[in-house]
Amino acid sequence: MVNQPQRPFTVDASTHASNPGNLHIDYFYWIRSFPSEPIELIFPLTIVVVLAFLTNWIFGFAFFGTLREGKSLHLLPSALFGIAIFNIFFGIGIFWILKKLIFLTIRTREHFLYGCVNPGVVVALKPPLVAVFTDLTTGKAPRHAIKILPQPLKWMKNGVPPVGTRLATVALYEGNLHKGYWDDFYPVVIDCVTGNQADIQRVLESIPDWEWEQLEAGLGYIRTTKPGLYTIPFVRCAFCHQLIFLPLYPMHREKHTEPLADGQMTDHVTIHPERRYQGALDIVPQAYIHPHCNGATRMPEEIIRSYLVNPFLYNEHTFCCECNDYIHQKELYWIETGQCLAEYFQDLQKEYIRLHGNPPPNPFV
Image 1 (cartoon, one colour):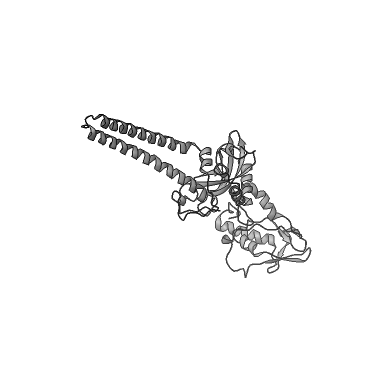
Image 2 (tube, helix red, strand yellow):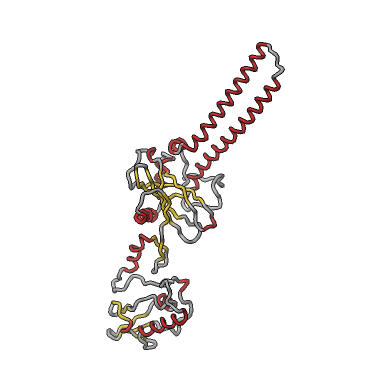
C-alpha cells in the first residue's frame, strides 16, 4: 500500500472511496493500454516543439550568415521583433498542450490512488468486455449497478483472459453529490496500468466476497453482455428489514423461513422497528392457549407491535409451542381475555378499515 498525498489535485476531495486503490501505475503500461489521450497531446506537442526549434535554427543560421557576409543589418530589428512574436505564440501553444498533458498525467495517477476498487469479470472476448459492480449511492439508499465496457485486456501479462476471470478495477465517479447517487462511473482494470503482481493481488484481495456474489447475481439478473450501465433492483426484507439484492432474495428468504427443531420458522415477518406500535402493551393480550393440547404460547413482542399497526400482516395460522405446528386462529384463545384469536384479529381489521377505508396497499409498511 502506498502513502497517499494529503490533498488530491484533480479529484474532488469532498468525497472518499470506501476502498481506495492506493495504487501506483506504470506510465508505460498506461500509454500502451490507453494511447489515444496521451498521443493526442504528445504528438502536437512534439510537432510544435520541433517547428519552434527549426524556425529558430533557420533564423539563427540566416542571422549569423548575414554577419559573416557583412551585409546590412537594417532589417535586423524587424526580424528580431517577428521571431519574438513567433516564439511567444509557440510558447503559448507549448504551455497550453504541456499543461493539459501534465493534468492528464496527474489525474490518471490520482484515479488509481483515490478511486474506488470494484470487482470486475470478463464477459466477452471479441472485443474484450468486462462487467464491473459498484454502488452509485451518495446518500442512505443503495443504488447498485453493473457497467459493461471494453478494456484493453490484450496487454495483460498472459493476453486476454478467458470469460469468467475475476479482475480488480479502480473507478472514478461522475454526477451531482447532492442528488443521492452518481450518474455514472468509470472503472479501469488495474492489470492494464501496472504489471506489479504484488499490487494486483493486494487490490484483488481487498474486494469482499459479497461484492463478487453481487456481481455474479447481477449478471444473472441483467442477462446481457451489451456495453452499458445497468442498475440492479433491491427489495427490503420483510424479516430483517435489510435491503437485499433482488436476485439473491429467494435464497436470503429461505434462511429466515427455515424450520427450527421445534417446527417454527427461524424468523417471522414484522414491520420495520421504527414503524411498529410504540405504546404500552399493558392491556394487550400476549399469550394464548390451544385447548386441543392445553399448551400455552406467548406471542413475540415484535409481532404484537407489528400487527397492532397492520392487522392484515399475518395469515390465519399461529404457532403452538406444544403442538410444534402452526394452528388456525379459530382454535386458539387469549389467556388474558378468553377471546378467540380469529375474532380478535377480525375486530382489529374492521377497526383499521373504519379508520383508513381500505387495507394497507403494502403489507410491510
